[in-house]
Amino acid sequence: MNTILEKENKAIKKEIKSNKNSSKFNILKLFNWGWFKFSKCTLGIFICSLAINLFIVPNNLYTGGTLGLSQLIRTTINSIFKINFNFDISSVIYYIINIPLFLIAYKKISKTFFIRTLFAVTINSLFLMIIPIPSTPLINDLLGNVLIGGILAGIGIGMALSTGSSTGGTDIIGIALSKKNNKLTVGNIGLIFNIIVYGICGLKYGIEIMIYSIIYAIFETIMIDKNHTQNICSEAFILTKENPERMINFINTELKRGATYWEAFGGYTHTKTYIVYTVLSKYERMRLGRHMKEFDKKAFMVGDDGVEIKGLFDKYLV
Picture 1 (spheres, one colour):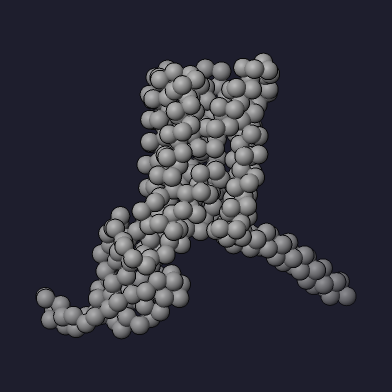
Picture 2 (tube, rainbow, N blue to C red):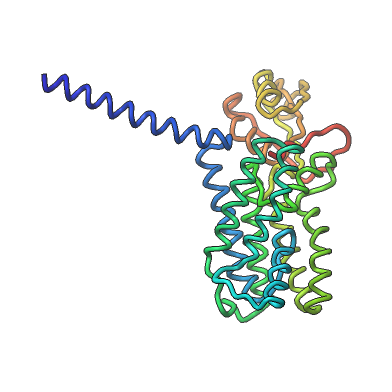
C-alpha cells in the first residue's frame, strides 16, 4: 500500500514539475527565444548600461540616439528646476520617448520584434536606473573612458541586436530602414541621428564635450555593426562530394535563401565534386557552418563577409 502511495506521490510531483517547466517554456515562446538568446540579450543590455553609467555619464558626456536626447532633456530639467534625483532621470525620459517607437516596431517590423524590444528597453531603463553612477570618473584619462565606454556599449547593443531584439530608439528606425535598403545599417542610421544630438551638445556645452561624445559614438557604431551579424552580407562556397540536395533543402527551408550548385572535378584527386554557392547574412552563414557536417563530414566552406549585394536580397534582421 505504501509503495503504491509513494509511486502516486512521485507521479504527482513529476506532473507538477512538468507543468512548471511547461509554463517557463511558454514565457520564452512569447519571445520566440531559447534560454541562450534570452540570456544573451539580457547580458548585452546589462553591459551597455554598465558602460554608460560607469564611463560616459560621470564625464558629463552624451551617448547619442534617443538616450542621448534623454540626457540632454535631463540636463536641461536639472539646470532649470534644480531638482536632484536619487537616480538618473534620463532612464525614465528614454522609456517615454520609446513608447511611440514601439508602435513602429509592431507595425513595420514584427510582433515578435516588438515584444523583444519592449523587454529590452524595459530592462535597459531599469539597469540605467539602478546601476550606481560614480561621483568621479573611474579613469582619469577622458579618452580612455570614451574608448572603453564606446566599445563595451557597442558590444552590448550588438549582442541584443543579434538576438533579434533592440535597445529601442534609433535601432528600431535603423532596422525598419535597413530592411528596405541594403546599403543602410543600424549603426549608420544611429550615427546620422547622433549628428543632430551632438550638434546641440556643441552649441550648449562646448566643442570638447561634442568631440569626445562623437568619438564615443564612432567606436560604439563600429562595434554594433561588427556584432550585429544579421546585418553583414556574406557569400559562401561549399565543396562537397555528397549529393548537395539535402544541404540546399536546408538553405531553402531553414535559412529561407536560394542556392546554386554545379558539378566540378578535383584538380588533385580528379574525382567528381559539387560546388554550392549561396548569399546569406553572416549569422546565417555561421548557422550553415554548424550544420554542414550533417550533410557531408568532409565538406568545407569558403566564406567572405561584407560583400556588396545589389538587386533582390531580403535582410532578415529579426
